[in-house]
Length: 330
Ligand code: BYC
Image 1 (cartoon, rainbow, N blue to C red):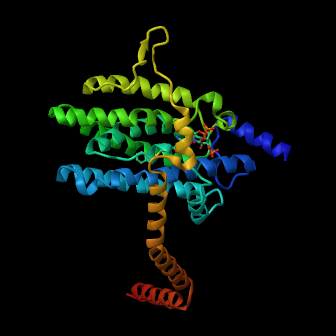
Image 2 (image 1 turned 180 degrees about the vertical axis):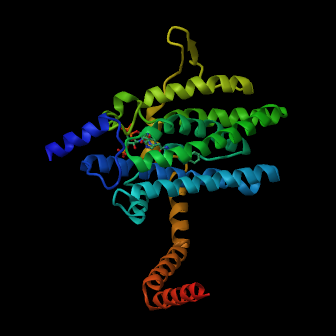
Image 3 (image 1 turned 90 degrees about the vertical axis):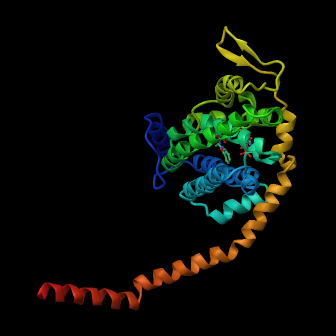
């Protein structure tokens, strides 16, 4: 086994992609199931805060755009569950792990979307953070995850732009609209910074994930990249980042920020966020309500399989063969 794991690491070091049929250490498989499934759960739970605003969007155009974005998120969940399933786990097992609290989803989706400006803030901040985090995952060593990420990243950039466009419209609007945009930024800024995970010193999985080239950058480095992008964007909007300690550090070429409230992060990831219970209860309910659809799809697929291998299919094939012969005779 030592030889197999040495050869595996050598393949990773040569930047070769690992595919589902390849040998892999059990820890590599488990790490990927954990991260990919949590990522899938985040996409699907992430439909809830914005989904609640589809019927309340301020114009038909905004409604259509938001509908498309939320549908994309459902689609991202499906690509990611598909990628996780290539590692030998079933979708039911993965969803059960989320429902029982064994698997996490991103902390950010445990906060409420209180106003229309929150939809803008989610698109601008949360999707920007997602892009910063996900672009390096396109080079993840596991092929199905990397390929899912390529497609997802393309769609995320449209999501980010729709969010920024909402913020821009509000920032250029009435005093009340500007206030709404500022309030949304105040509430979403710090939770967005927490999306990147604990500081590198407290990140339990990072070093192994670097060695396996699942992660390419540390949580702090990506967080910093996001901050450096977002601060000038807030300036264009004429909004204030809610951090009195924020300052440009010319020596490092980066913005310095105040302290992140890691106690709040721990509370949220352990299921005590403002909407944690609501999000899971909603997912459970939807899962139950949709059970008949999944059963019907499974029965239809079974019938289809039986049909294509069974006597009817044989008869169909023989008819086609007869037609073929008749055509040939003409
Ligand atoms: N929230 O050792 P660490 C989207 C957990 S959805 C909750 O640094 P790792 C969108 C971590 O899982 C995009 N938990 O872990 C959708 C671990 O706990 P476990 C979501 C977090 O894996 C709809 C523990 O803390 N993106 O864009 O090396 C609308 C220690 O952390 C969080 C992804 O899922 C958190 N924020 O690094 C709009 C990206 N942070 O598992 C937008 C894929 C950490 O041992 N995931 N934890 O119980 C990753 O890149 C990495 O898993 C992380 C964490 C950077 C998040």
